[in-house]
Image 1 (cartoon, rainbow, N blue to C red):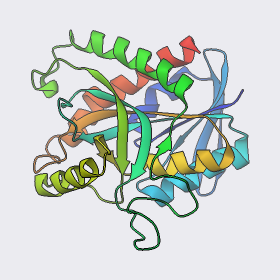
Image 2: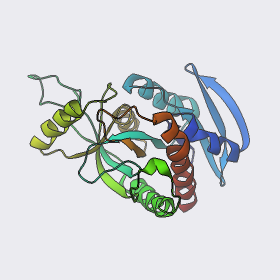
Image 3: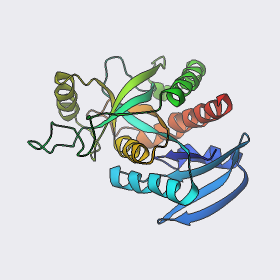
Length: 249
């Protein structure tokens, strides 16, 4: 069964690419995809680009072009849930587009043509991904990594909200969170691609799971040391979590 592993940033796939056997690169839809085998599984690696449209194009390309039958997405996100701190990991159970609003045609956040505002990830794949994330953060607690800011990393599972906006304001993230919570949606993190991939996977009937490393609290310090965090923490998390998850499967 072909597995697509999509990531938001190249640093998250650098280690995986070096682990592939029989690797080859194919260009499709303006993107480079790497095909090969990882721990015996047939995989295709690709980068989503930034934003929902770019992510949807990438997800469609791996399904139409390479016959992907499962999809795993890795990336970083801003933490907005209570107790979700820098260095934590969030495994998505559902996605929602926080900037979707076609009122009065439909309720806020609901995508036209879909039954509800939220799109569910595959429960079985996500359970395995959470186990892999828990194993990773347990090891990370002993790294003594300064960029973890003294936090003991934890793994969470729940709702992730996506929108075409890099959020660097506590006021903005607070308003998004408050509005969602008032309607019964409790987001743990915000990012820019996952809901679009979830929608494409729902359209194609492809099981989907996603994991996000929390790089900031989606506030006024969200830009601080971001490249350093990706290199030292997020890329390391992604490599360990994906390898563990693939081996579990």
